[in-house]
Amino acid sequence: MIKKKNIIKLYNLPKEIKFCKKCTISNQRPRITFDNEGVCSACAFSAHKKKEIDWGIREKELIKLCNKYRSKDGKYDVVVPCSGGKDGSFVAHQLKYKYDMNPICVTWSPLLKTEIGKLNLQNFIDSGFSHVMGSPDPIATSKLTRLSLQEIGDPFQPFVYGQSNYPIHIAKCFDVKLIMYGENGEVEYGGDMKNAYIPTRTVKDYSKHYFSSIPPNKWLDYDLSQKDINPFIGPDDKYIENSKIEMHFYGYYKFWDPQENFYYAKKFCNYTVNPDRTESTYQKYASLDDKIDGFHYYLSYIKFGLGRATGDTAYEIRDEKITREEGVALVKKFDDEFPQKYFKTFLEFCKIDEVTFEEIIESWRSEHIWKKENKKWKLRKPIWEDK
Image (cartoon, rainbow, N blue to C red; front, side, top):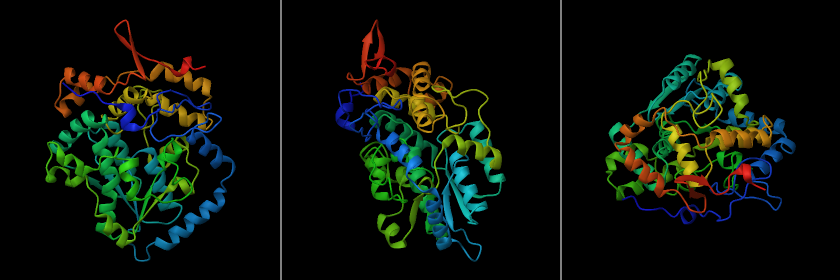
């Protein structure tokens, strides 16, 4: 029997559910804060970046940074994490073709690659980029995915480890001192605001912001060996400090708009969308490369009452693509949709059956978010009933 998890304690969640007055996110998103007017930190930051930030000055800062690190002998001068998706493609293409940098682009392999994802990655490379792929042992990755699903309620965690740490390894291998990530998700989508007004990220924040407070070494306490987890571990912190590698957010220097990034990647990198919308949401162009994606978002829905459509509508409301009323309607229609398309493939990869999967799901269902009526689980306070 899978042990029941205490969601409130694990994530320091408030027992009373409240929704942002401007978007569709609730106070159940870990690390998000609300002001006295009931506006979430992501919406407050969005308003700030639209009204108060001088993006001309920020671009001058970017140019200064590029001038500092630009190679004079043809060597790589910036590492750009990029899966072939819209955001990484946007960042890499701008750095190379607008700011005359020479990026080495890095992909940590999706856990289970999709055909559209493989196509977009190849299209991106073909648009003029040097590229390396990190592919960890699939047997060890399967074990870690299963354990992550059970113990932290997120099968996507192995990918997050690699996505965060592998670019630093590549910077070390090629002696590159600058790594350029995309957006700061903590401030753009709601979370810890400590780095909201600085351009850099630090490995000291990784455990809290990206690793659910469980860095890779913690899995040695489970059925994993040092050999299993080594590919997911980054270089020693002392090396990073001594080598003076800088990790920056492109979203600090450029107004971050995921939909505009998509249009840019489509135009310059031949980015291709799914023919059909993605399960659990209404979009066709985001997070297309991994068959595990849907279960990451579904577990978020179970744990926090916040599914894929909630996340998509929240930032599109902030970006003024849709209204809050439209967002609420989309959440009501799509947020609870189960990712059925790759369900059997997911179970096979994790080496579990449907009964075990359901036990894991139930272990993450908190009573302050869910109630059972007529043998069916329902949200206690869905956004469309919020007063």
